[in-house]
View 1 (tube, rainbow, N blue to C red):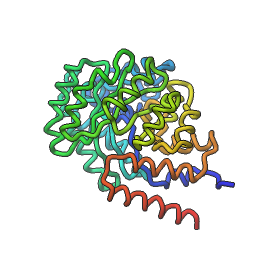
View 2: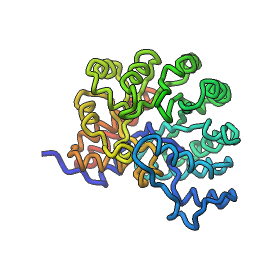
View 3: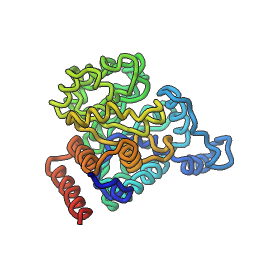
View 4: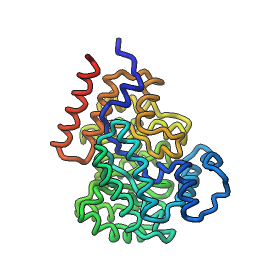
Length: 342
């Protein structure tokens, strides 16, 4: 019989986070502080009054999510947001983070690209002192135009060349915004050395077509969410053979779809897919960060310590770090298991 999972074990388990939106880590306390700093009237008198409620469904969540961004104005704001998240990760034994950011959500409201990335990058640099390696993934907003994405890729070029941006992603409202809409831009980004991933959110219109486009045409290295792939065994086998990573966010699924998507997640794990657990937008999901996703899913669906170790190892194996770094972090996990087994 497997040993019962404890929160202490989960908190100490070395892990990587590959699917978290920095804008989605904005907690009400910080939002209230930034609004006061920037002279923005939120219409509330305390952080407790900030409305983070929304109806289930991706579109309703995104409306709430984008509303929260209005308080992010200065380089210091983006630094404070990122630093607050990375400090939490240091306490959760997160050793490596590949962090999404959405520049178009800010440039479209008059904030410069440099303001956004300078603040985020400086916090990532400072987090090295905490033992957290943080890299950035720039996402296109799929409900914006191709021209907007093209301009954003141009703006990102000098920062990518400096090594500040590791990869390119695709997020936001998927309806009528398939991967093929951005095919040429992703092809260009690949030639420029970007790693590639895309959101394929659960239960969207044409979701299997979108997963197929991302895998077979765009040739992404990871799929963010992507649990609907289990409905197509041939496509699932293809993804597993390619050692494609699946960055799954159980508590995010619960908040948006009223379902952790446990059945397809467990099937992917059973088949040997590189499934990792991640927090997505924890500031909007009841402050449930990565350890909460590991622990609550394990507790509800009776995962063993061995299962969680596999998921943690998958997080490093499907990351975009060197093989040497992967071996280093995998050894940290093995050493931790030896220590906790004493």
